[in-house]
Length: 381
View 1 (cartoon, rainbow, N blue to C red):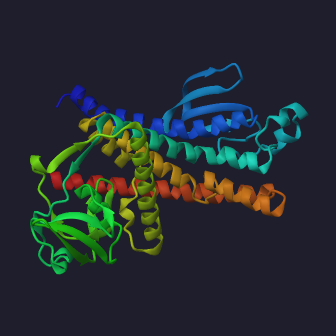
View 2: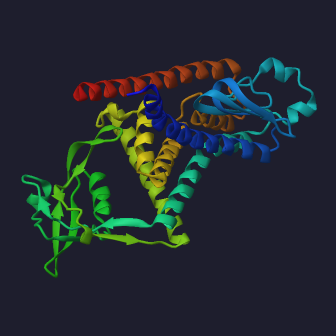
View 3: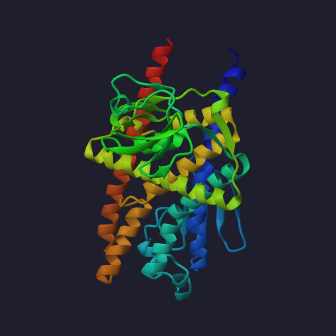
């Protein structure tokens, strides 16, 4: 393989990765930026990426818009901040004129500061809803009929009495439109009895099955989900394309966003309780790999990944860890209750703890990526 071919192969993963991550980070920081401006706070810098500056311009309000060489995040630096994590520059604050203090982040009341901080994660959720809405409205949804073609021996489905030819109509009274709808309910209901209404040769039959928890492989690693034990064949006659209007596309997009939030929250909770495997935590290497795979499928698949990643970034930032948005919100909640902010030493200590936790998480996720990549190379070799 020539050097040019190698470079093209690498670019096929790096370019989609940079696009996806930059889109997610830009909207997250844009949320902080817009609400900050609406609250009357001066923005000193808006950075997409870290490290050496590749490009910049300064707008008429004095905000320096910059692109950093390392496209793994970004920040908005408000007036009076010591850094992009909104730590207050005490010395600079003390020397400020009344006019400067009035447009500084630290001088705003606790409710404005909380709104500015919360706007970043909220923007991530809004971005996901917009993307999902566009995909549903433009592409529609390909639905595979929830038809049982085979029943796995020894499975929950066999124990419940499922037979080939059964058409799943509803689960616990909820209408099922596709095989994917059925899978989503089953996967989130492991060890929970579910009531299935199935159409069997024109007659409705009620079956009760309890999905069993199993480990399955996903693009991001191994996860434990409920498994029923039925299979369907993706024959052309079992597929149909469902089109949606703009309003219904928005409603479905909102539901899809909530589903990803619930699944991610369930995974994180299971991780803390020891029910989930940590090998599903992925870093930039794995995200780049999946971005390249989605780009090969098409623009819609790549945007879908961006929406899912945006939700994950929004949730991660809401965790009550100092340095993240959720940590700031926790400080503001304490301030609202106490009537005064925590002292600078306490906030600085929390910042160091948060930095250690976030750095440790990134190192562990990257270790997972490298370990997974090494295993793949060994299998290919």
